Length: 248
Length: 291
Ligand code: SF4
Ligand code: SF4
Image (cartoon, rainbow over all chains, first blue to last red; front, side):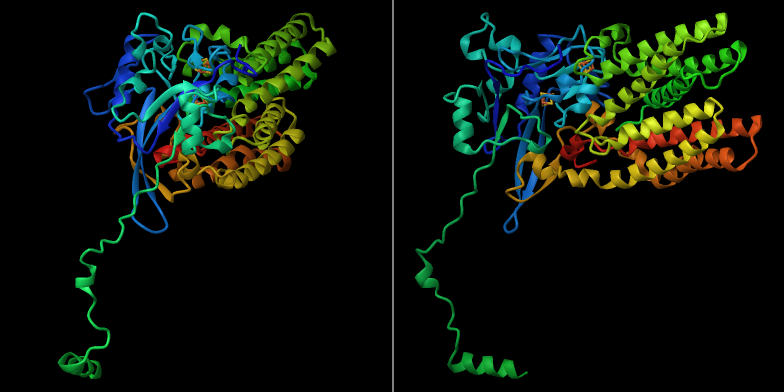
């Protein structure tokens, strides 16, 4: 049924730390790899080595420049994938029931054998988190690696989403937002985790941690006394020169 | 949004077809079985043809039957159910009129109501999308309904009503453009809210996530088509509304002129619908520094 559950037992999701993300795209590659080899239709590429390559990805990394009122601009690398919204418009618009939000953990999934590939769910998502696979004709989106996190065949350390496991900067964290003591809930509280496009009313589960303020370079004052500025009111030859030049 | 030909054909012709069916269900025009056959044929051809066109943009049209299941939550599903119900009821009604020369008034009224409801459901598929502020307004269903009723009246040969409705459609169209042009800004979606980084300063895209286009950009960040939008607006308004309403209201009635009015109206409506999609800006464009 494509009505949304009023409440989910868990709220699994990601915290993405914009302070530590270095924009290496490792999460993009590992996501593509895992989700091509495992659950559901593979993520296709068309014209991969040609002039206009186009492929399906569930996670993409943008890079933004933020220019404050004063001071230099700052680059912020910005990974973006499904935010597993609590009020997910992509679920309610689906005509077939293929899109659904799980009651047990809040993960938003697509049942690919029911999907007719109408694309309406992708239209309803503000974040560009859904892509229609051009070869399979079904909607693809982040599954939060539902085939890893509960997979008892994997070593315990690997039972988290592929992107989180891969990130060399530790910029991605996985956990249960319904538990106030979880790693993700604490990170969100401590670092002021924020919603993307909150005014859309989608109530995203995933949270983004803003970049920390940059360090200020303090004044270096060991040599300062030796470098006292030239007298503001010069005397002698300099004084004469100053006055002479002024008169010109 | 990408102005896909299949979706333009679908909305224009199913709108006309269901508009005409609504009139036929009300017993307008009241003609004999043979003339009725011609009217019903045109109405069903438009409505069914439009619906078939809509399946061309599906990834898996063979599973279309599943789309009837989620009418509780999905406007697209409701549209499918209502369309089939309208076609079945009107099919039975037409069968009795054509072959038995029998009009069951109640059946026709139900069919007419279902036809109008179908048009409303179609419009709500677009109007429900918060991600496309230009569409996300009560004006969208008004625009679809006025056009369908006007077009239906035109095809049903209701000269005066059609003339007035099409003039009204022109007015509604102008209002939707005027309001639509500022809607995105009014909603306050910016790259700053999209990234949450507004508190730090002005945000701009430094480097895109990929070097060539992807599905999102092709489908939702369609900016190429807007270059000629002002000219197209004039063309749409003149052919969709002005020419047919002048012909219907000011000139003497005749079969040839009626045909001109119909052709003009359809051409203008296609231009209008092309703009409906091409000018609609999706919020995801913000992440790509394009709308
Ligand atoms: S991010 Fe998009 S696809 Fe994911 S749940 Fe929210 S609206 Fe749906
Ligand atoms: S593309 Fe598939 S999952 Fe998305 S709304 Fe259509 S049927 Fe549902």
